[in-house]
Image (cartoon, rainbow, N blue to C red; front, side, top):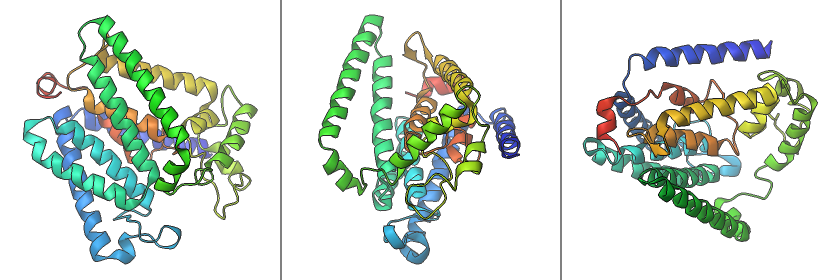
Length: 311
């Protein structure tokens, strides 16, 4: 029953996105995102400052900003994606000033939210997006190959340095080594995948049955695996995982031709990277209630005029 209900939600949100995509151009969508980000950020700042009992967290995370959202991590995630969207628009002359204001508000909001996951996701997304954009600008295929090798080596080096300084990073991000219980959830999710590896348990089915039994020592019921890829395999198994990889391949092929990024493809590719990075510690790959899922579906292929005006 849960699978049927969640499947209907996904179909409905997909049909909505298809309908809106036929009416909005890529440039209009980008402008709407900028305006939407600015409004939400301003409202959140006003709420946190003027109504701290509503705009800031209480209890364990006391004082952390959550703005008009229900949790500080939700506000932090919104600040992170607003930062990414505004960075992509900063190169467009007509949106430069607006983008700079949103970038500033997003960075301040993300820090005040104290959301370590949002900060790490934003930094990682910016790094990978920078690498993809820079390497795709190279003309010769040999230059792109050398660029990818250098970028991969630099990424591995950064990862190793971060691993060596892991305790310092956890202290700065106010996280523990269990990643707030995630390392206790993941092995149990993997065991669930092994029970039905090919077809999965059905969308949302595993957690509706096991949520009370997956125990991390917390007092609340675990609603998902806190990892989008584990939840994908739990729901749809290897078959669903392969279908997801096929979708990624098609999407990337649309925006990168013969190793070079299509002009105007920076925003959709960056949002894709953001979703892929964020789902390492969150579970939102196919969540109909997650705004990024709708945002990703809404993004149309850039028009010819937009391609000429974008980096």
